Image (cartoon, rainbow, N blue to C red):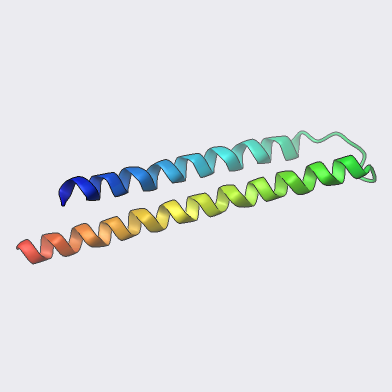
Length: 82
């Protein structure tokens, strides 16, 4: 059972890191937009980047929930064995 808890922690942390990377890249691109605000292409780019930013946030939240669940499971196993 210990191996699966470690795997869950690893998967959760991996999701958190991937989400942070995605959000960082989207935020950098948003900050670097130099197009005119009235251009339709700029609005489409901004929309796409904002969606990517939100997907990064959701990945971080999902990873945090996985880590929290693995921590709870490990704590329950330790309490049961003690």
